[in-house]
Image 1: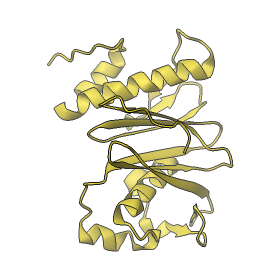
Image 2: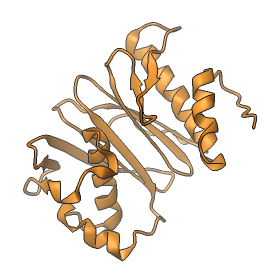
Image 3: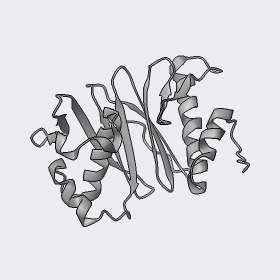
Image 4: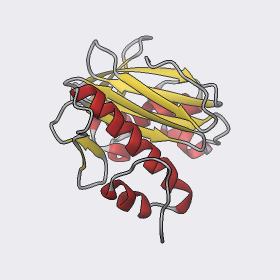
Amino acid sequence: MQLVTRVNSHDEDVQHAARKHREFQHRSLAAAWMLRTGLRAWSGQPTEAALRRDKHGRPCSSTGEPRLSVAHDDLTVAVAFATHRPVGIDIEPRSRHIPVAVVDLLEPVGESDALAAWTTYEAIAKADGRGIGLPVTHLARISTSKRWRLHEGDEYVVTHRELESGSLLAVAWRSETPPLLAIATADGVSQDNSP
């Protein structure tokens, strides 16, 4: 299978995208392009993008900084960059149906909206590094704040944004300084770059 793009892509990005389902390949390439562009800007080296993938295929900076997270849905690709601390991002279309069994499972998350509960869980799980292997019961909301605590003691700030594309974005991070976001939509709708 040959993957053709209009952006300058790296061989390893094309190989990674080729392993994905056909409908996700261009999103994967768009995310890789956004990650590499962000890393070039972060490092101040316009020709060097220190991007690699861990054993699970997740993107990370070769230098360890910045910390990265990426998410996409049908119309939007979003990337988060954070200094020193883990960051996680999730994006889901508002039209997504969350099955009742999943809603019941997410009850400990404490969000009244099922999609907000799911995106909160996914963003924290990505930042934590365990992904969906993170037991939902390990999450506890701290009062009515935007903070969450894991049983292990780590605390995350979580914020949600409704995007003009009709999607809900959640970002989780472990510091007082919010991450920088890069958001691109298929229709070119510009989005603010702060959580």
